[in-house]
Image 1 (cartoon, helix red, strand yellow):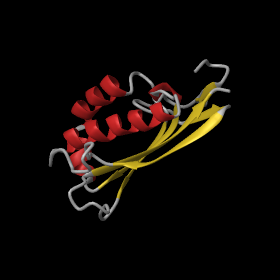
Image 2 (cartoon, helix red, strand yellow):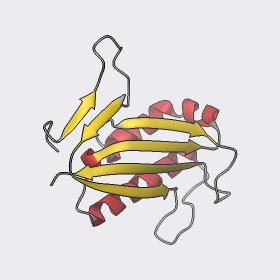
Image 3 (tube, rainbow, N blue to C red):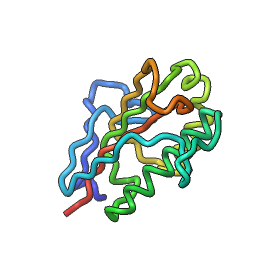
Image 4 (cartoon, rainbow, N blue to C red):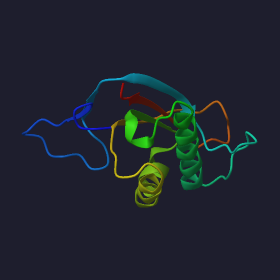
Length: 135
């Protein structure tokens, strides 16, 4: 997506965030991806490992986006639902590498929220995205 179709919103006097954007303005076809967890094609959680679940959830997101002919760089918003924020923080470095491997060096507006539980009791993380595909 070109910079004319997606604009990163970064106030001049704010420090640049690491790993996300403060805001994104985009124009085109909007794609909403439901919360993805670390379940494989058979619908079962791939691992108890937080990082492995992140990897699978991101792969699932990319696969759903592909159904709309969209790519990771079309993501404008990402929300992470975490069962344990300490587990997330402890895995920053590893999940950062996984994120760059699957999504690339594209950092949309992003929020992470600790929740009491997810619907699938084995899930440690659930990630939902909004993407905008240029017209």
